Structures are given as C-alpha cells and as structure tokens.
Amino acid sequence: MSRPMTHTTSTVAPLPVREADPQAIRNAFEAQLPTALAWRESTAKERIARIKRLRDVVLQHRQAIYDAFMQDYRKSSAEVDMVEFLPLLAEARDAIGHLKRWMKPTGVWPTMLTMGTSSRIEYQPRGRVLIIAPWNYPLQLCFGPLVSALAAGNTAIVKPSEMNPALSAVMARIVREAFPENEVALFEGALATSQALLELPFDHIFFTGSPAVGKVVMAAAARNLTSVTLELGGKSPTIIDETADLKETASTLVWGKFINAGQTCVAPDYVYVHESVKEALITECKKVIAERFGPTAAEQKRTEDFTRIINQRHTQRIGVLLADAVERGAQVRAGGEVDPATCYIAPTIVDKIPAGAKILEEEIFGPLLPILGYTDLDQVIRQINAAPKPLALYIFSRNRANTDRIRLRTSSGGLVINHVLMHYTHGNLPFGGVNNSGIGNTHGHAGFKAFSHERAVMRAWYVAAKMFFPPYTKNRRFLIRSVTDSQKLPTL
Image (cartoon, rainbow, N blue to C red; front, side, top):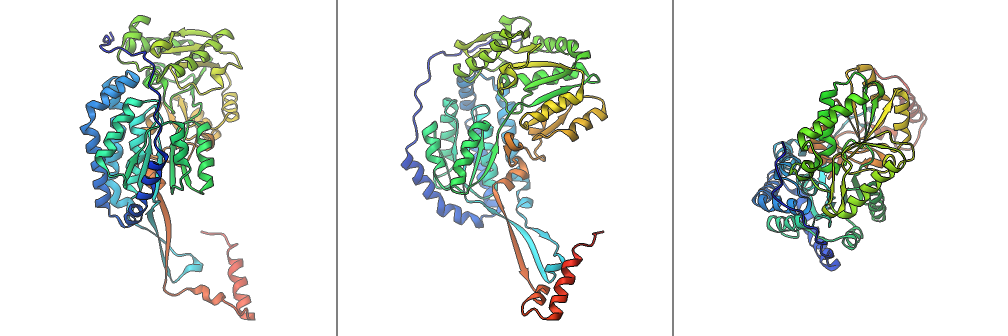
C-alpha cells in the first residue's frame, strides 16, 4: 500500500526568469584566466581538496536540496538520495580515490622510425570550461561534470536550468560558498544567459540536453573551435524476446521507465515485445505498477513515490502525444490520466499503436510506455537502424544468439542486457551517445579525460630518422625506399 502524500503541489505560475548580467559573465570568464593558467601545475592533492570542498558544501545543504526538489518536482527525499546524491557522491569518491593514477603520464613504446626517443602522454587541463546542465537530474548533471572538470584541473562556469528555480538557487549558494568566482562561478538564467555564455571562447563545453539544442551548442562552439562533450538523448528502444523472464523484466522495466516520471535521457522509450508473450508482459507490468504506486488511480495520484512532470507545458506536451495515439486507435492498458494543473501524468501503458503516431516519432520524456508486438527480430533490428542512433538500447532475453544478433547489428551509446539504466551508474564504464545521441563520454576516468587534453611529449636522444635528411644521395634514396616498402610487410 502506498503512503499518502503529506505535501501539495502549488499551481501558482512561476516568476519570470531573471537573466544574468552579460558583463558579470564576461568578468568571471576573464577572472578565471590567471587561475586556469596557474592550475596547469596543480597537484592531485590540490584538486582532490577542491572536490572534497564541493562535496562537503553540497552535503551541508542536504535539507535545502530536499526542500527544493519537493518544490520543483514533488520528488521524495528517498528518490533524491537515489538518483541525485548517490551518483554525485560516487563520482566524487571515484575521482578522489583514483585521481593520482589518472594524472600519471602514460609511457608509449617507440616505433621503428622513432628509435632513440622516449615518449609519453600527459594529461593537461583544458583550461576554462563551461558546463550547461539540464532540468531532469539537475544536481548530479550539474555537479557531476564539475567533479570531472575539477579533477582534470580546470576552472568552470556552470549554467543550471531555469526550469528548476528552487534548486538552481540552492546550487548557486553552494558554488558561492565552495569557490571564489575566479575558480568556479554559477549563473542562473534562461536563453539570453546561455547565449551570452556561448559567445565566449571557452576551452571546452560540456552540454547535457536535447539533440536539437545540442546542435545549437555545437554550432556556437565551432565559432571559437571549442571542443565539446554532448550528452544528448533520443528514443532508446527495448527488445523483449520470447525467452525473457517476464516477472523480472516487468519489475525492471517499470522501474526504469517510471523513475523520475520517465524524465530520464536513458529511460526505455518504447518496447518491442514478442507477440507470444506480449499479453503476459503487460499483465506483469500492471501488477508492478499497482504494487509500487497503488492499485487505484486515486492512490497512484496521491503516492509520494511518483514524481511530477517538471511544469505544465511539458505535461501538456506529453498529454498531446497520448491523445494523438488514442485518436489514431491506440489502446491505453494502464493509467492514462493527465492533469496539467498539478503536472501529473499517471504511469501509463499504451498498446496497439498505429504507424505515424507522434508517440513513436518524438522522444517521450514522460511516463508513457508504448508496447509494440513483433514476430520477426530482424525486422525490429531494421527499424532501429532506420532511426537515429539511440543513447541506450536494452535487451531482455535468455537466448545468447538473439542478444548477439542485436548487439552486433545495431549501434547505440550503451547496451544493457537484462536490465536498464544501470550502465549509467557504472563508474568504470564510459557513458555517452553516438551521433544524434551524443559526442564524447563522461563518468570516472572517461570524465577526467573529457576535460583533459592528451598532450604528446617526446624526448629525443638519438633519432635514426636523421639518416633521411637531404641531400638525397643514391644510398639515402635506397634506404628511404627500403624503409618505406618495409611498412607493407605483415606484422606478427
């Protein structure tokens, strides 16, 4: 039985967003230049101290963060702990524990042409970096990349989303208490603030958001030849074959789809399930929804374990996707309630969706789970390959041949077999998209490298290549030709 809600959601219209002063942004950017230059020589101990400072100040504001999430999302403290604090603290702990090893130069063997030299790869800070964070997981997607930036020795300017004003205000206090502006600065605001930031020649931009806005960020970065890491999204498919453990699959699928009310970039966006087990899967999913959020529509709406949509506009957008599918003949098998006034959409399962429905074309980013039956796995693979490459692809199967076929014939940022979302939490795996779903990786060592320049350093003792210097005598021509032709020989 779900617990009754003890909080109510305000329907008061949010105050207009106050944009940051462009001159204040430029002042902070200029103030960080001397710091960035000095931090090129920063030690692991110094960088770890900055990460600990950030972590400690965040934890000092823990209750304020809980309150802000309740105000912005009506999100329970348990879910805030699980999806915000846990990933952020794990990121900080990973960097603190491994930074000395990450910073250590990597030696490389000389090639035949570079005999007589020693070489290594050093990891330099990129310099002044910009982090633009989204609204769906605002704490960890703002401060998680900041941990990586600090680990790599960079200064940073951070821009949180204007859609979570209560939390953004708390994060601004955290940054001001943890760092002077010439080290880390945070600017609140909306479009005008983002545009002012993107005009500046940062050394790296880390953006998390939609593919459409990612293209704008990349175009702005191109004007200054700034490198980028783009963590985007897309429609992440799930495939459930006839061999899957349906109880375990339903339990996992419902969790991954409806956590944060589906507002997750790697949430299962839609599901292909083999026709022979489709009805059984829907039955199991309905059971799980009832167990976790309540057996009736009224109890599901009252539960404190189900987050709200970020605002009324997004609630209406998701409602339009559902209405369009129903008008075209789709069947709602669970849920279906949409209440824009309280930013509530029930955990919903939609079946028999016809081609052309908007819910199959747009990223849902909400608690709607489309179910598509299939009989031909190869056709499913062709349909996935015909769409933009997703951020994640999920497979539920106990058939190794099926999982291998899907793994080898598709492309996605990440691939998870018999679970969802968990690759995001694995600090030893790079997390990122491919093409439309993102550029570059983050988390752990991959995050450190994203904010670092891998600099090639060579020291010459005796370089055999001087035998190739002019003048090109007969003997030197013969030597050059012989060495060139030797590159065609197979390697052992």
